[in-house]
Image (cartoon, rainbow, N blue to C red; front, side, top):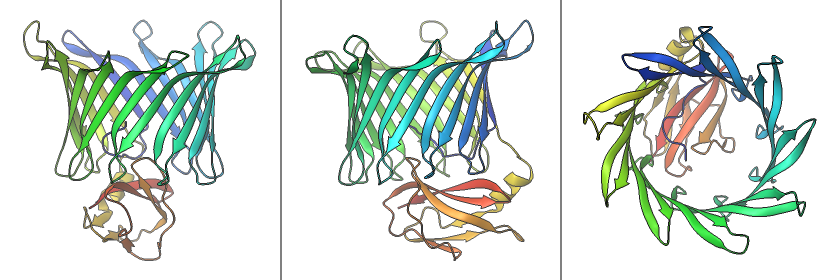
Length: 358
């Protein structure tokens, strides 16, 4: 389950590992987007100490259908011998008339063609909420799909997932494998996650607590580990955010309970965004109030500027049906309580403002 502030498009993320007394480069993720702000390519590179440079390792390509939904994903690995990209995995997603994903077929590259690997089927309830996903693997012996695992979702009255149970197939019956239990704060943001494993009954594994600042931006993710029938400190992730709510840096620390009994930094991730000058100033000048809101919000744009193609995106990434955009007053009275994005085009760029509907 995703958690945290919904951010504008990041250009690249640099990850460093703490090495004795300094941060050492480890890996980097670079992103490319289309004119609609959708990710079209993601490249992972690892740091080469000998060359003192980033060396590309693998990449993902994303394409979208005419409705703007993710259609196909292709991953490739970098062949250092041939200095070229080689196909690795590919997935194709299918949607019903309501825009819901119903199936994702995964394939893996074999010499010169794609062969079946996995098949995921999605089931929804009458409220269009995902209630079940079934994963199947390709059986080369029977040349058919064989059940592998299934995930069942339980939601509260606001449509938020409060329990997620993963079961594995023995080929004859299903048995419990993993369970996640979620709680939310008054703003419907994730407050805690309980992770359990099935072992003749549910056994605690990890408990995660999420902390937000006054602007509803995630600033800390604290992880406890179950040990000797008690929760003990395990690790934490501290987020630093830009003024517009995008993450600028996150640092992961481990609790050194066997040694010094202090927090030890382990991983640092630095987020870089394109056009941080003028574009960020315009974004910060965009006013959306009151926020949180019960019924209506006022949108104020920078002087001399205009916005186009306003749309609302929910926390699941789904664009909601169109609404009246010919006014500076935005009516959200019909929306369920929760966190949303108001997306728009400003100076040819897609920008977003987060808001909370009470």
